[in-house]
Length: 469
Image 1 (cartoon, helix red, strand yellow):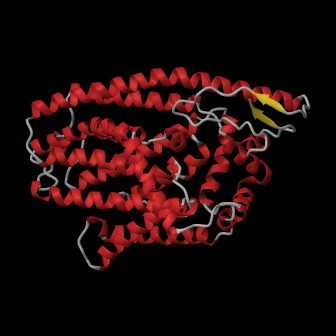
Image 2 (cartoon, rainbow, N blue to C red):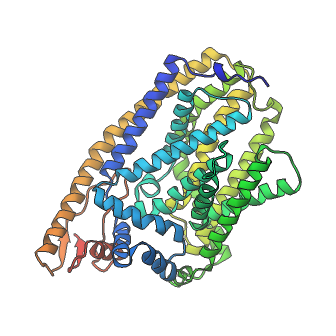
Image 3 (cartoon, rainbow, N blue to C red):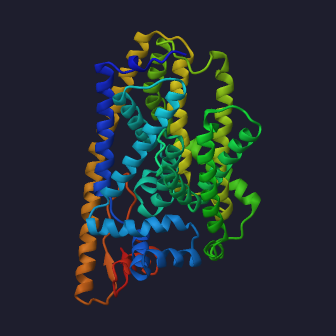
């Protein structure tokens, strides 16, 4: 295949539309990050951090409640920084930067495997478009992206894994690559169980391919060495997680697990996704996939073809199978442990899988067949305009909702701190918070002894109980 590097970039109209979409997405996510506020569970972590410090707090959680130890080693210093900075937008910005960097590096590796190198401006814009796709295909953005305690567990762990993959496939031979791989995969090994199971499955598949000596670019000597180091540190970290006492004590607060119940709840959860969430996500899935369809078509016009049209059926079947595996490894462990349908935050890696299917599927379909370029261009422009209008309207609505929400939370916290400083010891009944929009609400319960209320009380060091009307 001939290297088509210099030819692959978008014209001014197409590039401008992508830039506008990505600028609107960045504006939206930073707007939400700016108006985001600590939730009750966040105050619980702040209390533990203030009481025991980072290492002591991680040890406390490991023994008493949760063995996902690497998340806490990051979460406690993060809470310190966010408190001192006075804004949660820095965490949102950190997530976006790391996710964008990972998307750029991984896309660059994938395209270079086919002797393709996109113009840097096109690459960055498509990487940002992938980030936007991931965000909008997340069914509950508040839980997955803006609830700090859970975002650190699920979303940030996934982002760290992507950084680890970037280090593995990096062309750099610098000595820091190996410590970086060790750090990233140590973090990934000590995080939430569904992601750990997915990583073990991927290592098993690649290990089988390596043993059976099937050729793949990832098995060149330098990659094999990096994969071995990644697996070594990942396995050691996950063993520490599996051996911890905290998970057993947490299990005591839950119903006795049952394989059948876990299976039923898994299917119930998937049914809920298909019936309630998919109808919302499907139009976005199509709209965000069209720019990738356009890119695939553009590459084919340059005589660059990823796969033959006859291989498309095989690719679709394999992709569907891999997505089902991802779905099972994500949903069943949580359904089994909880004996209930898992919360939306558990689905984070499924949202990522949907984004990969959307963008990758669009790219492959656009590349597999001959389409009239003029019609594909019109389709691209139309979809971009619709997406831009959708994001712009979302910004308008979310600004109206989240600005009022943030103002109400700030007013509540100021009141509670004022009463604390005045030495109040009486029960305080608070007004309910307005809707939080795409954010995760910091609302507490009408029961003053509810754990949400207790977390807020401990985090703010209050000497009195609180509840809402």
